[in-house]
Amino acid sequence: MIVTGSTSAAAHQELINSLAVRHGLPTIHTFRYSMLSGGLASYGPNTIDIFGRAATYVDRILKGAKPSDLPVQAPTRYELVINLKVAKALNLEIPPTLLATADEVIE
Image (cartoon, rainbow, N blue to C red; front, side):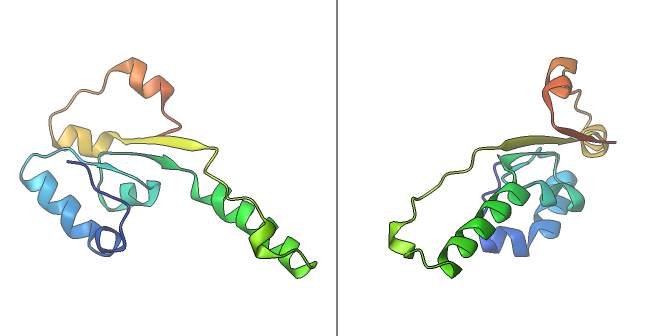
């Protein structure tokens, strides 16, 4: 099941993940914080990187740059996080090659 990065999904992530595990559905999320509430995997932008780059925008604006002159930026760093605890609960075996490419594996 693909769980979007919407605010409603974030607000109900614990419920979504508990129901998914109860019904044997693997989930993939947009943000890594969903792994803390029982998501199977996440693949999405690194939020720390995004907020850090936003701080540089604020700095430039405070130094006099016009916001309309600043370029729009897309995320540059994406991360894959896999939760092996949830994989075991769902009786899933994650291929070793996928685990090797993950940025973080939660055990």
